[in-house]
Length: 160
Image (cartoon, rainbow, N blue to C red):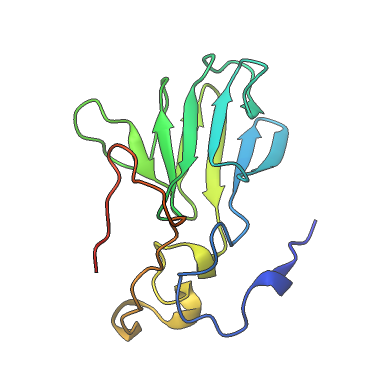
C-alpha cells in the first residue's frame, strides 16, 4: 500500500513540526507477519498481556513502553530482554527513538518510523534541508507544554 505523502510540507525547513506530526509508528515484523502500529497515545505499552496497546506473542507481560514526552520525542524503555540501537549506561534500557531505530522483543523486530520533517533527530527538515555542513542552524524547539503543567520527574525545564 502506497503511503500518502500529501501531509509532508513541500518546503520543510525545520524538524519542529506540530505536536505528534509525521505519522509516528512502529513497523513490526516476525517471519511472515508484517504490520504497522500507529503511536497515537502518550504512552504505548507493548507485551503479551491482552491489555497492552500492542500485543506480541512470546513477549513478557509488559516488555516495553514508549512514552511521547513533553519535547515531542518518542522514548523507548525496554523492560524485558531484547536488542536496541543505543548503548545504554548502567541499568538504563532507555533511548530516544529516531526514524529507523530498531529494537527486538522476543522474535519480533520493531522499527520506529516518523516522517523526516517531524523527526527532531534530522535537523532542518531532514534530507530535504541539506546534509552535514550544508545545514544551517534551525530555530529553537517550540515549547510543547500545556500552560500550567509542571514538569514530571526527570524532565527538563527549558528556560529561555
